[in-house]
Amino acid sequence: MPDAKPPVAVIAADAPPRAKASNYPEPFAARVANRVKRPLGELFGLANFGVNLATLPPGAVSALRHAHARQDEFVYVLAGRPTLVTDAGETDLGPGMCAGFRAGTGDAHQLVNRTAEDVVYLEVGDRTPGDAVVYPDDDLRADFVDGRWRFAHKDGTPY
Image (cartoon, rainbow, N blue to C red):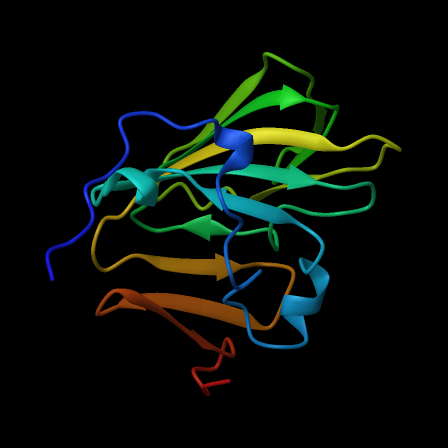
């Protein structure tokens, strides 16, 4: 049976949420369990980069604070007022603001919703093979191998 033809266009907010909230192993997955990501790029068969419509309810975080070795990332805030946490400190963001994270800088980042309103943003990242991620605040590291993330402790012991 041939693959279904991708849609020409969709209403992003109506796209189905990612079936699994996180690829992180426990106890880390529980820390991001209340975020909602709608993978938009996959709907169109995009393979070189990913695009997600993400929603952070009050108290939620986008990810563990992390830095990619090879993957560039970009976020654009659509609604709400998240706090961007980086190695340089904290920056309050609002609708229309964006931030980019160049691969290989080691500048770890995450978004945190410390408000009573939902935060909605677009996140875009490339899918460069051989990526690796460091998590400076947690005993965790990740390597992108054969199209999937492999998680380990910082000493290399697998989760």
